[in-house]
Length: 123
Image 1 (cartoon, rainbow, N blue to C red):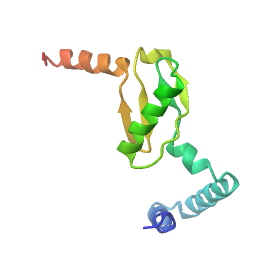
Image 2: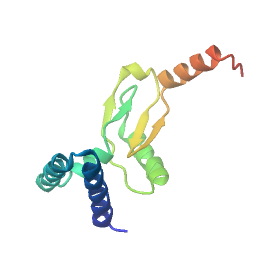
Image 3: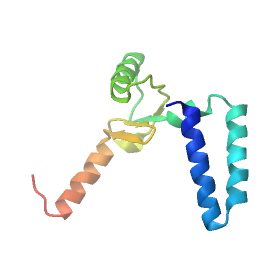
Image 4: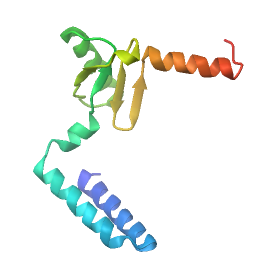
């Protein structure tokens, strides 16, 4: 199924919701604005699908290439990595590919451990 077919389905569904809740005209204007944004910036869908790639520390090119290869296998497509350093992660990386989030950060692992201990789960 092409992207255009999917986009039309979403647009029709949104406008149908607009008819139901009385915001038909507002949703139509917002769809038109979004369409013009995509025409002005053709790389916007790629940027939205591949937001920054937070890492606890700076990564060298070999590490970035290895992560890109691994994420390509997971996502089934090429993934553009824009690595951003985020020391609040303590260690590890977080990958967001569309709706998929792969969080390998120490920060999240510690938060999960804390929640498990609070629930009385001792493994």
